[in-house]
Length: 326
Image (cartoon, rainbow, N blue to C red; front, side, top):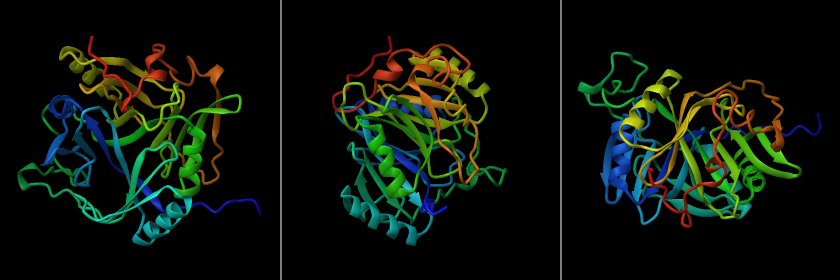
């Protein structure tokens, strides 16, 4: 009992993700026409989008860039006091950047990086989506009508980041922001991957080992459907319109989530969840550890085709090459 570490409940959820695209018009078309997301606003070289069941103003920012990669990940805290506590902890860690006061769609945020160099921010004040009357759903718990285009996703689920040192990044988010380790893959003493969350989900963020040791790269972003059949529908749509599907509908062993992976035009991998796997309510949850030797055919894919080598080796960032839809 004396060794028990008091949990930190200061981070509530993933709020939004900014991705960089060297094909912004084509990327926006992918999210709007294939995934049914809506453009909320366009400011300069940035486009803000949301899924139809999200209550915040947006969950995705597409920023025009000369390469594809991660812009930043944003986390909302549970209170203004929680924000102040986490800022102090981040500053003490040495990875703080500073306060950002001119933000679109939310209040002051504190910017920082992971040990590997991924840009992140935390904030409390947020702007909620103000749905036009003609687009309001009769279902009061839905924040706008279900779109009549593509196979519309419902909400942002998580982000997966390539890291030169998944253990260091994982420990940083656990110790400084209060995340909890849910599952991990190890190869001897080396952490190959980790799945962590601040909520009851198995993960809102994952880290996977970047095979070349490159820093700050993005593996994928993920949007949620909640219904596995939707993956076959969107897979059919993506295939018909020439988008590259890396992994067709499948089920993970790690997280038990029903998944598929496709690439949007900038080369960014996008995961689509047919369900989010199991939920964790046990406050004393013991992390599940997979040995790398047991992962192929079990941890990566539980029911479905074998994962290609590209899943373990390809990500986007300054040094990544764009993948073509061949």
